[in-house]
Image 1 (cartoon, rainbow, N blue to C red):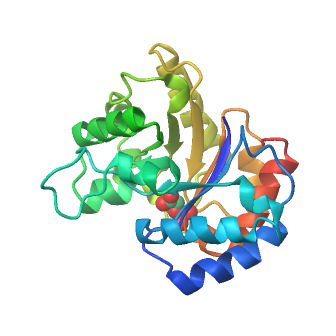
Image 2: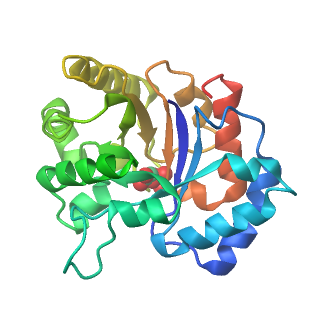
Image 3: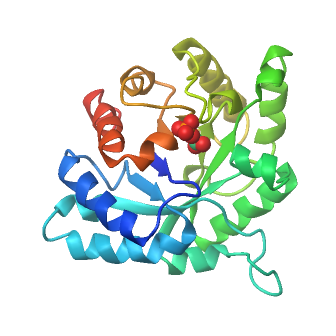
Length: 256
Ligand code: PGA
């Protein structure tokens, strides 16, 4: 599976959802949405509204049926006394098919460890959600040549479950929201390394997305690399025209 995924992070409200979709949908070119989805990950509180509006707009814009919903996080617990948590099953109930797990912002600000991330992956898989597991090194780790050591630790969580059901996103932390994209050479080097590393595990055919300051102007070159299975888009996904252009780049280079 290949995919373009928009992560709105802590942005958006009800009014934004409607105007966003009204700008995005007319711009979308045709694509194989079943196998190569376009996924929107708004704050969880907007999921149900997003789904309702997509359904309302489908007769006007058939592309509305091609958009999948994702969440930005999931609880490592199934149910019970865990105030503020949202379970994998509750996400499915809201129409989600995907969930981002282990984003570097959560690793940094919510102290998410690899162990907790492993639990979240299991919860997601049990509920039938497709995890998008984020991995990536900080600038200091890159400068100290620890990239592959860090990635090996982060990837150790990928030990069980259906390989086809998990996606990875390589997101160098220093490229997220900074405007600094990794060079194509850096991306290819890491993606190839990840694919080789996982080929020794049950994960032979995992898709590895790239994330970190993906924009309409750098997307075509990134998406043209055979080891890149799509993009995880943060800042630019808040601009529906920019996201449509990034998506179009994926279609044009034959990625999706
Ligand atoms: P960015 O974020 O595109 O704003 O760099 C990517 C991400 O955090 O997933």
